[in-house]
Image (tube, rainbow, N blue to C red; front, side, top):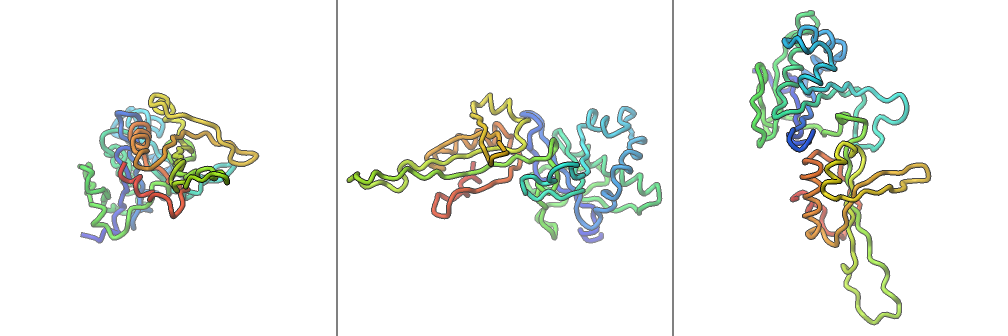
Length: 282
């Protein structure tokens, strides 16, 4: 068997990125030594390959999304503005697939369809296919795919933020900020506890429009925040006096509102504050 680097390995960062409360959304990035077999001129190849899709109701990319719930994004830069407005690491022209459903198999079948078309056209030889998964993901990929644990691959999984999100150009971002207590009155004789009055603010922003219904359902307040004289940011936020006490609110946002979608975390707490690693346990 060839080494893993010869596979067009596929990344599945999350099985619960939340198309809605009942439907999982999978992100699929093609990586590894065989990546070019799929990504080179992928848009033209996909259009041609879909003319031979076994489902006669799927003959173009729009029907692929409507019927199979698979969306191909080629990663083209915008005509105006930045390709990575939030500096999260988006790579220009990095194709990505999103598949809604209990498994990512529809996306894997589409990749195989495109590669098969290129083989029939004499452009490439047939590579081997491996889907890179986490140990807790029970994936049974379709033929000819092989499931390979992430821990067994020589290279780490790339960031889910290297590719564009399923809608728009902004991923979901979150920020933890510590607001210091007001200064003790100079004439006060009472010794102030260093943690008294400390407030933490956890805010979510960026590509959050699709989740507005669940934010409203769970009573997560929203506000317009002035970033600079020309820019306003709409955020959802909660406040709490300590990270331990904030766990219920954080759990509500991360699990119930955002369905555990990968978020780009911006830590605004200082080195002397409670460890932000607490967030990983919610």
